[in-house]
Structures are given as C-alpha cells and as structure tokens.
Image (cartoon, rainbow, N blue to C red):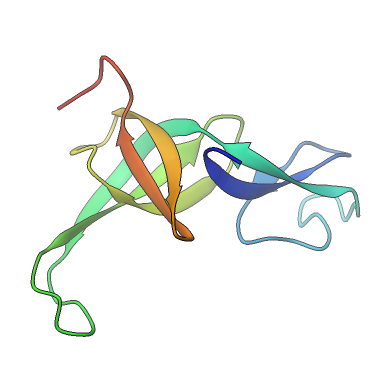
Length: 103
C-alpha cells in the first residue's frame, strides 16, 4: 500500500487514525484500511530533544488528510499551507512537499 494506512468507515465515509474497530462518528462496523496519499500541512513544530540520544532536530507536522481526518507525520514540508504527499517509513508517517510545492 503506498501512502499511509488510515481507517475509513464504509457507512459514513469518516476517516482517521489510529486503526478503528468501529466508526467513532456513526458507530458503523464497516471499517476498511485505505491509503492516505496526500494532504495539507496545518501546523509544524520541531522536536529538539529526542529519546535515545539522537542529535538532529526533527520537524513534525499535523496534516489535514485529503478526504478528511488528521494525522501527525515527520515532515520536510516546511510550513503550514503546503500540499504534501504521504509515505510510510517503517511504520512512521512521513510528509514531503508535493510536486510544485517545494519550500
């Protein structure tokens, strides 16, 4: 699956993370896993003190996923308002600027 795995309700189209057994919006049980492939950066912060002694700061962004929902991802997008493509890096969501939106 390319993109980042999220849950989507087959009854009301709610989507989000983490993986759900039933829909938090309508209570439906038709939950499927789908790939979120893009979105828009809502907020960005930099984590400077990392567990395990890693020394490089890491940018983390809140991403408004296309089609609904929000997720948190490592980000190279730079600032709010940038369109991103989403990928999975060993289970961790990663956001990179979409073509034409490099900052």
